[in-house]
Image (cartoon, rainbow over all chains, first blue to last red):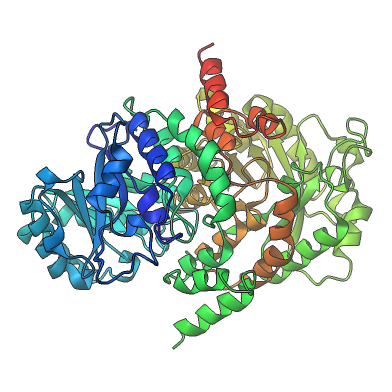
Length: 316
Length: 316
């Protein structure tokens, strides 16, 4: 599958940071940046740009805030053609604190937004675009928002925003291939002058398969993480995506090295991957919040009770 | 996805037995049979029917041979509508030792065959069908055999055999969705009077996604295993498949109980699942044999060297 327009974005540190309060050791972040650069991946997302007024530096590591000086310590001395991205959530960033792109190591800012917040997201991407950044809007929790409000949001993005790509984000790991096909076709039909992206979650082991499905129907911006690390079940594994794409610009070997040296041991310390409560949450089209709480409790293997609690919730 | 023609076959003990020389404790096999029965799954495959002349009972457990008396100890006293299946490999069974179906606890015999052995497979299924068994032919390693020899084999099956279903078996975990679609359409086109089945392997986390793809294009016989257990990366997880099918006859809860009580602890003792050398073998369309040998060596995490050894092999 070789299509030159395809851009791969590694969000290992950003989505993986949702497991460990964004507190990755800078040595590991540098190793990731080096491997991603050597492997020829287009973008690396290093974390969130959150307001220090809203979140405490005592509770969260540096990749919750992504100060330029912290980023520069990571990139210093490493040869790279990989662009750097940060994510912002609607309502959690002081946009006036963001310097112009020409003064920052960051190339792209991605705005994560629910459908209901799309007006704010458009305001934000336009602000960042005027400051010289590449921008995307990542439409979260889309498995719950597929009605006419989605069409309207996409029409607004197309007519009012300067954004370059709009992502379908399967936050709950609930999508099967048919809804992915339906969504990519809808996005492409309405967003005639933008690229479409896909960000999968692996609750039902479908993050990679759904990413392939999105590619087949024309999505060109693809998110993945090393060894699939990410919140709850994690994301589309970068190594599988590179293996599938077969684009000669990619080299899988630096990623393989980093998995064996860093990510296999890391998986022994923090949990992600195929874990039954996350699979159940995905089947039920639920946020993994309750499953994550279960995994931090002494009832972590009590799958039947968890399943029945979600069935009861749905009957409310 | 509710289609009454769909039949789900659990092959936990049969494919899982490829990891532990078919030596599951009878208590576990009974627990699996009970849970599968309670969950309403159509078939359970309990092992291989191999010749005791070819394989030693010292090296292999009972599910390598599937003697009727061993099976009857498993099923005794458990209420069930689940049919029992055994698998045979071409050239590894004494067909004259197989009793008529009316005298056996086994309902179905599945013949695993490479395309090149299809004449023998047809002879065998016809023999077993005459003895009163349901039968399938499982076409192995199909990612390597997609040329005109496959068409010819399917035409022979359609015109010469009494088989009820023919499986696409992705032995190497190498198929992506597009080849699955292509294969299911081909099978359905040639095998006009038979059902089509799909048996995935999970080397690239695609066993479930590919099973969905097969369903969408008309496959009605679907293999899966509890918690995805099976050779190398394992198979399509039964719990995910039941969650997708939404057929009211299925109950996922007995499977969830068995995973938490038995299969999570078992996974600590024997290895299957998403493991990088298996993923690499899948990408390369290679038998997982070399990857399995690597995992049993002291170089088990040396992914780059393994990758490069396969690249070199392919250049022969």
